Picture 1 (cartoon, rainbow, N blue to C red):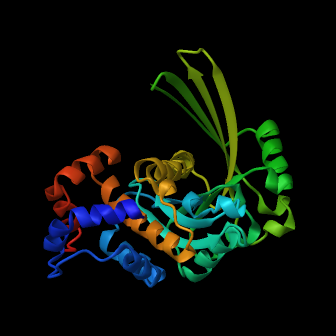
Picture 2: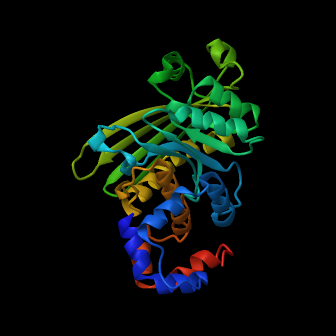
Length: 331
């Protein structure tokens, strides 16, 4: 936080001119922290989505990944804390744009209720949502299905019986759909195979009734490192309420791959935006700064340039900042 404040002081004349402020000097460090704590973070996130969100026209569903990220700078190791504040986001597969949907304190709360509350309050849904096995539980899937959304949910050991059912289907039943893609690059050859199966909800545990389980997607990824000649293989199981045909199967397979866009988003926040180096022990302050970083990241990823390189250039040339704001009609 002190580094950010010093940067504001050093460039205050340019900032004041950009914002049209008639203020002689930059706000003090103690005062800026009080300002941050006083921000209504929920309204702040809504405004950010309205002004800085991007709209992309595309065929098929608009897919988003839901995932949580811990703000490591909020963990006080001196007090023996192991968990800190976390932010839960939806990240668009196609654009990398992210929307904050909630926060939680990892030392007291869990990520699951944040997702449930979001889908309870979301109203009618028209998009597709992918998420890890943590959020694959009946209530969550029911909410999305009943509100008209489409989900692609990963199945792991935390849903033991469902996982075993998926494995048995893949082992003993002929797939309705299959595709294979081979890609070369970055010193490796990756082979992705996907199988699609129709699911009969009545054959599953009763607890899944109402979730609309209609299809199973099995994705196998084999990676061969050309330099070390080592090979790795992993298999992932996904369930969906999407009724399969050839086009929808291909879309689900692509959505499973696109789910990892959320990991790219986390990498940009951690490594290129330095979020984990932002140390603050005040939970409100940590959440507000996470909102700032979300907005900044959304603006930068749309430039189709390396985020670190673009940030470096902007620190030396304030003229590069103007188009980011004017593109969104903010100034």
